[in-house]
Each structure stands twice: as structure tokens, then as C-alpha cells.
Image 1 (cartoon, rainbow over the protein chains, first blue to last red):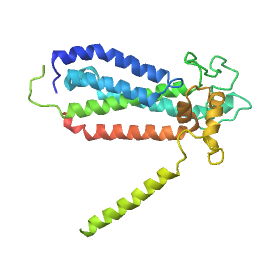
Image 2: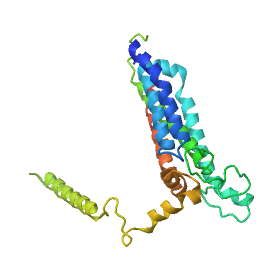
Image 3: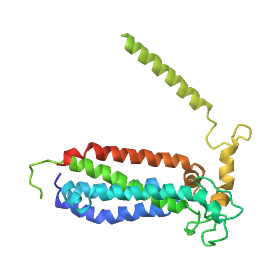
Length: 165
Length: 93
């Protein structure tokens, strides 16, 4: 695939930032509005796939390699699992605290008072403890994973011998 | 009709019976029945905001109450990505 016409590229240039902003909004407001890490990550990965279709896999592979995407996905997975294990380790920090796997250790505590709030509206973005952090980790993981799949498959099935624009 | 087609028809009939009975056994949409309702959904509706601080109940269930499920989903996605990258690594050259 060597990219599509100038019309498609222009439409992609207009639509790409809007799709990115919407997907990142769905990830960042996952604990307040419908959506979350998986859904917003799928939206962002769809926007990146649109870029890949419009500009061709060779151009996109020149911008970002799939090894970098693998590193990003591993960072997301490690962040998610370490947030889950921090729920156990927080027993050592807080006394009179019941710790277990996937414990929401930032809510119902008195040490960091800015996170100890209950969400009662769309403006309270500093609520819900570790749920936004887990949303960011899962979102990073889904973005990198889905885009790596699409990029590798598009690059492997490109037409060889055709002169790339 | 061969033996294979006959087995397929019987299997389809069993699955269809299960689906129909499953659809009949669900309680009606929007009606609150105190006797038949399990306690868990009402508990989650009542206590999600105080226990997790999240305004969105679905995300609170997915990332807090049922974190293991999300961990499994993330593992499935990771395995899929690793499999695709391993499968297509020779075709790049």
C-alpha cells in the first residue's frame, strides 16, 4: 500500500486531531463518563489506522517502528499489574488498612487528601483513586497493541516492486 | 440427510432450546422485583460512589470490583499482539 489520493490525505489531516482528542478524552474521563481505557484506546487506534490507510504502510513504518509500540504496550501492562500489586504493598504504609490484590488504595485514606474525594459530577476528575491511572495504563496498552497489529499486517502485505510514492 | 447433518440439527436444537429458556428466565426489563432480584446489582448501585469514588459505575466494576477480569482481558490482548508480531516477522524482509 503506497498511500491514497490527495483528497483522502487532506480529509485525514482534518479528521485525525479530532479523533485523537476524542479518544484521549474517553480515556481520561473513563471514571466519570461512559467509556474507559479499552474503548478510548480503540478510538485512538482507529484514528492511527486511518492515518496508516491514507499515507501507506511504508511511510508509517518510517515514522514509528513496531518495536517501539511493543515497548509502549509492555509499559502499559507493567503499569497496570504494578498498580494492582501496590494494593498489597500499601498495607505497610497505612496502618489499619486492609490490603489485597487490586485494592483501590488512594480512596478512603487520609495521607494524600486531594485524591480522597468522591465523584459527584463530570468536573471532579481527581476522584476514584487508582481507577484513572489504570485507565491510562490500559489505554496505552490498547493503543500500542492494536496499532502494532494493524501496522505489522499492513507492512507485511504491501505490494513489492511497485514504486512507492 | 447424512449422519453428520443429523448431528448438527440435534446440536442446533439443543442450543436453541437453551437460548429460548434463557431468554424466558430473565426478569423483565426495567421492572424491580424485590423477591427475585439478586442483591448484588442493588448493592453496586448503592455503594459504588462511596467505596470507589467513581461516578461511572461500569468502570468502577471493571477496574475495581472485577479487576481480575480486566487483567485477563489485558493478557489476552498482549498474547494476541505477540502472536501477530511473531507470525509476520519473517515477511518483512
